[in-house]
Amino acid sequence: MPLITAPVSTPPQPPDTTPPPAQIPEVGYAAITYIDPTGTRWPMTDTTGQWFALADGVSGLGAAPYTLTSDPHPRGGARLRHVQAQPRTIVWPVHVKGSDHMTFTENWRALGRAFTRTLREGPGTLEVARPDGTVRQIRVYYSEGWDGLGRHATGITWDNAVSTLWSEDPYWTDAVPVSVHREAGAMVDYLVPYPSVSSSQVLGATTVTNPGDVDVWPQWLVTGPASLITFTREDTGESFALDMDETGHGDLLAGETVTISTDPPSVRSGTGDNWVGALNWPAATLWSLPPGETAVTFQLAGSGPGSAVDLTFYPRYEMA
Image 1 (cartoon, rainbow, N blue to C red):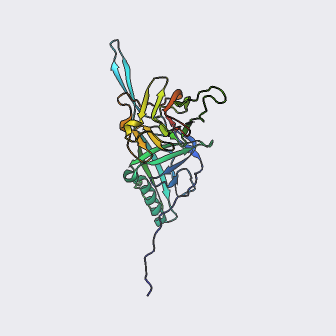
Image 2: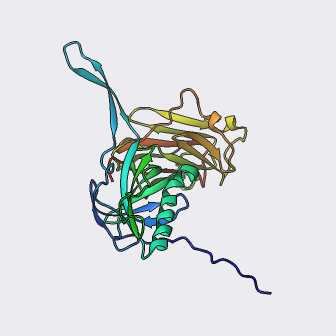
Image 3: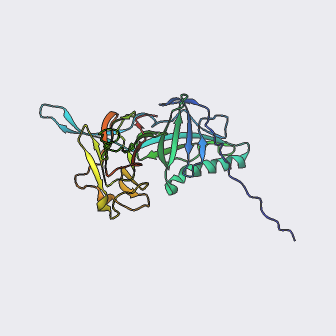
């Protein structure tokens, strides 16, 4: 005998395309997309869609907020002692509509859930794409404001919400990482065809360029063979070293990897083992890269064919 079932309502799915650019306060001409914790992309500048950001009232997309700490000066005034970047607050007004009440209600609930789920599943991302193809992003959490206007005729087929989004890191990051790769060259016979030397120590003394506005904290992927790994920032002399004998594993063999993250400090083997204790504490300094050019040295004792270092970071910017 046939069974009668209730119809299933499918939440609206946003198109997985980049929305058209629009004029946005503090940003200029750009296409903006919100990416929720599940990776679903919600276009925010397509005014022909079922929802879009309202230019009037958008704020918090400009330079990062700062707190300045100062000390009184005996002759008057004060002297700046410390500058601390603060979490960023973004005010994000959104217009939501539908062809009828139930379509509007589904759109309103779906987009509201896309923001509020950041409090349970991790941050979402605001993405700003420029006409030249460059893209900057910032990770955000929903704070408050997904309420309607509460006025006559709203909440039927349209309404506006003025959401407040909160970002731990006030800086925008490039969507595309900067990578530097250094690999050991082929070893040569000392006597063939004439006396020569190939280094088993230094993979590269190189200059790394940070195109961003503020310091970045890179990640390093080291591929063996290697027995002692040392990275040095030449302008400050800061360095850190990972002694493979202290990991309990022994030398890093050909093809084996270890990943060193500088913020937060982390050292993980290719199999997930925690090797952070093998850094040369307390002398180890997991240094950052300032804006501009910085001379660095990658040094691997016991390196050989296949030894490699990959440095990766996402440039950070004051503004979108």
